[in-house]
Structure formats: structure tokens, C-alpha cells
Amino acid sequence: MKKNADVVPIQSLKQDPNNARNHGPENMDAIAASLKKFGPARSIVIDRDGIVRAGNGTLEAARLAGVNNVRIIEADGKTLIAVKRSDLHGQEAAGYAIADNRSGELAEWDFDVLGEVLADLKSSEDPELLQSLGFSLEQLQTLIPSSDTDTRTEPPIPKAPEKPVTKRGDIWKFGPHRLLCGDSTSKKEADRLLHGIESQLLHADPPYGMGKEKDGIEGDNQYGEELDRFQMSWWTMLREYLTDNASVYIWGNPEPLWRLWHLHLIKSEELAYRNEIVWDKGPGFGQRSHLQRSFSINTERCLFFMRGRQFFGNVNKDDFFEGFEPLRVFFEEQFAIMDWGPADVLRLCGVGMYGHWCTRSQWTLVPSKHYATLQEAAKGRAFVRPYREIRKEYDRARKGGGHLDPIRSFNETRAYFENTHDNMNEVWTFPRVETEERYEHATPKPVQIVERIIRSSCEAGKMFVDPFMGSGSSLIAAEKAGRVCYGIEIAERYCDVICQRWANFTEESPIRESDGARFLDLKG
Image (cartoon, rainbow, N blue to C red; front, side):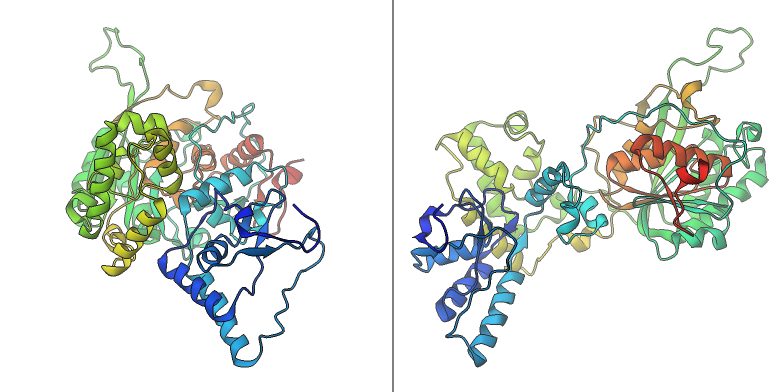
């Protein structure tokens, strides 16, 4: 690129192929109107290769408006550059300011592209890069697609200490996650952690009544009516912190699960039963013993409910917005021309989205990146229609039908559920947690099980509640899956186990909320 203030043809500049902003017809019309009325007045930013990094909409509108040349100002990021328009003043200048801000408002994020760009930036060696983009930590966790291939493994297992650092009432912070050392049946205690919270998922592994208090499960020596009262006390308290359409997963032994949770609660509250999840732990003990009076038990059970009245038809098949039908038919026809099916889409684009792009079932618009891939693979036989034209038709359909988001209000009544991240049914085969991996806890769940639950019923970046944290599998699962865990554990020593487990896994110290003290410093 030439130095200083040379003028170059506008055609020498290149659009950003990974631009995450969509400039729909209304936005382009606004930019074009501003250029026509006020002329070019704001700068755009290009990199050393002539790729536009800020101002792609302005560049495109300028080309359409007949602007032929661009003045290049070399800069190194150390001096603020101002564009001085001596001819702008008074009401005209005020009008330009409004037009400039309004045109920026009319652009929209392409969240698929934005997520991919943010995921790439996350791998940068500059730790401040992501923090300087204007998104909060919670927003970044929502926007960045979670990886299903988190390769981090947990280091050696921490022991439960005899003299724990944690004291009753402490709240520990683990990045966005939180842990309260307290009683999950006490509203006064739990409210310190959950005040103002609305969680879309509750994952609970409460005491089963198996007499294992000596093994570290407080409350596990309760039986019968006493245990039932305990179960209802924590449920009655915690349901206040759940959304009206939250998902609920509760572990336990089959008989009390069905008697208490299924038969009782499903009558007294709006709970929609979905599945009895069976954890197959592999061969059990005494399978060929003549002393047995029943089959050997090698499973644990979990009931899966959804709160509220749930419609279990298909959201787009049964509530499909007809304004999208011409676009759906277009994509269906293009795939038919190429004789491409689900396997071809997965091979070409790396995503299993054929059904979402071609059928009325959960239909969604093909992202620009994948459309470009399909265009290239079709070699002119199909998918020749310009993507921008497709996007304009999509935007018109959304706005013209009064459907800024045609299924949002419908979805708000349904619990979140997404089961395409894994190949699974209601029988889950995972090895039991062996002795050295139990963190000295009697009934820990494998991280993979909790991760499967939260990926299925908690949106990326959103928060779930675990009222019986035990040894902390939910915390590790949340960190790996890009969700946020708010947990409660009554035993001080297990809170220390959770803190140390987090520190071992992330190489970061938990922080005590009350005074900012670092767990690793206090532990010594």
C-alpha cells in the first residue's frame, strides 16, 4: 500500500471475508442516503493487506453510490486521526451525526460468524484482546461456541482435608462460577448465592437414604418420611430460583424417585415427565452369587422433568412461519439438483444441519460461510444465487410479517433441549467412578454425565444450579462445556476438595467473595 495520503481506486480495497456484521437492505439504504446527502465523511479502517476491518457497509454503499477513489492515511495506532469536513456545520452537521449513528444501529450481528471469530481470538497469546472488545465475560461465554473436544485432563486427585479452609457461609468464586458452603434447604443461606437468579436448569444428586453419612454424605442416614420431608424442603425452596420452563434432573433410587417425584410432584405441580435416565455402570457385584435374592444392581437412575406446560410437537413443523417457505423451498431444490443429503452437508460444511436448512422442522437460514462452501462445491450447477440477495429476502420476510423473531415467543414457553451434540438415548453407559477418582466421596457422578446433561438442557453461557455439589463434578463439567455453575455444598471439607480440584484443573485459584482472599494462599 502506498504511503501517507495517497489516493487509490476503491476497487483495490477488499471486503472482510469474516465480517460478522450483516448489512440488510434498510441499513444499506441508510448508508447510501447519508452518502448522497452529506458525502463521504467518516473513515474506514483497512489492514496492511487492504482488507476492510471496520466499515464494510460503508465501502459497499460507497461503491454503489459511484464513489471511485479512497484516500489512504497511513497510521500506526499511536495517534488519533480525525476527518475534518470544513463544509459541515450547524443543522447539516447535526443531521450527519444522527445519520451516522443511526446507520450503525441498523446493522446486525451474524452470530455464527461472530462466534467463530471470537473463538479464534480466544486462542490469541494476548490475554487482553478479548477483554477489549466491549463484551462482558458472560456475553463472551454465550457467543463463543463451546468445544466438544476439551482435551484438558484432571491432575492428581486432591484429598479431603481434616482442617478445611472453607467455613460455613463462605462463597467461593471460580471465574463466573460460584460455590456456597451452606444448607440447600435454608432459604436464608441459599439466597446469599441465588438472590435475583433465574436458572434454566436444576441438576440435583441429593442423599438417597443409603446410610452413607460416614462416607461423607450429610443427611444420608434419613429414611422414609424423614427423607421425604428433606427432599421436599430443598425442592420447595430452590424452585423459586428456576425459570417457569426450567429443566430438572434428579438422581436417586428407583422406588423413591417414582413414588415421591413422579407420582407426587407431577400431580401437585406443573412438571412434564420426559425420561428416566439409566446410568449403566458396567458389571456389578455378586452377579452369580447364590446369596442374592434379586438381580445385581449396576445402574443409577435420574428423572428428567420440564417445568410448565410443554408443547412437544415440533416448533417449526407445527408453528412454521410461512414467510420463510420460499427460501426453504429454494434450498431444498438446490440440494436436490446436486443430489446432496445429510451426509454430504456434514462432509462439505462439517455440520449436521441438512434438516434445519431444507425442512420445516426447526428451519434456519444457511449462514453465509456455509453457503459459500456449497457454492464452491456445486461449481455453478446450483447455489448460484448471490447470498446477499437471499439475506435481503430473509430480512424482508422477518420484518414484513411482523416477525422480528417469528418463534421467539413460542420458544419462551418451552424448556431448552438440544440433543444433537451426542449420539444418545435414555440409557447412558459410562464406567463407574473408581476408588482413586472418587475424591473420597461415596456417590460421585462422572464429569461426562453432568456435561451431557448441561449441554442438553442449558444454553451455552447460561447458568444452572446444583444444590448438592459433593466433590465438584458439576463445576468441572460447566467449565468444559462453557456453562455457568452455581452450587451449594454443606460439608466444609468437600468445599475444599472442590476448590482444590478447580485449581488443579485450571491452574487458577478460587477467590473468597467476602474478602478477595485466594484459596491457594490460605491453604498454604
